[in-house]
Image 1 (cartoon, rainbow, N blue to C red):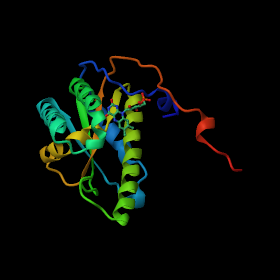
Image 2: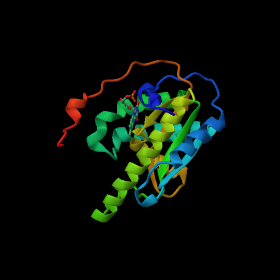
Image 3: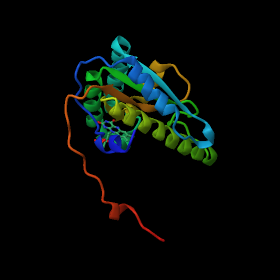
Image 4: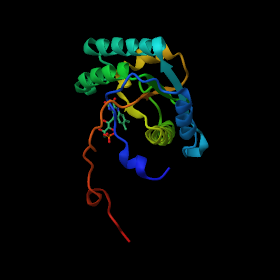
Length: 197
Ligand SMILES: Cc1cc2nc3c(=O)[nH]c(=O)nc-3n(C[C@H](O)[C@H](O)[C@H](O)COP(=O)(O)O)c2cc1C
């Protein structure tokens, strides 16, 4: 794989109903597990949802978003709820969902000390690298993806449903793209880098 998938990838928010071969999902996960990770902890876990079980996951997310209106677990992020509803609609239209868990992480709703915070930052970074490997592999296989963190608003409902140890990080919706969005705005190199050489 050259650098083409890096520049060709877009977040896809419209999917066709075409079935995704499970071998392609396995290729994505195989690429994910090759990512670098802090202390080689490999803190990522993946749960692939399709069909009725995917619908149930989305149902729990819907419940969480409804509950968020009256009893917000993330009150200062409240403005993000309409966007999360939109994300949920996109999710329901994708054939598959890969839910991502930090097996080493704790609920974001419990306090942690500085050591644990550093560990969590490093594990989150490692998982980010794994997810990007998945997205780029999907791109090279002709699949479209959407990286989703809006699951956070339904954290309680979704973790209860998942019944798995660790921290829910988010999900990746996977399918064949039914849109070809243009490249989204990127900051210029000059705005990002400072050479001190
Ligand atoms: C950690 C993370 C979480 C994201 N969560 C969502 C989400 O919940 N819903 C959504 O529609 N897009 C989500 N996105 C996609 C971003 O909006 C998108 O990557 C960004 O606008 C740049 O567009 P591009 O991916 O097409 O280059 C997320 C992206 C990342 C990296």
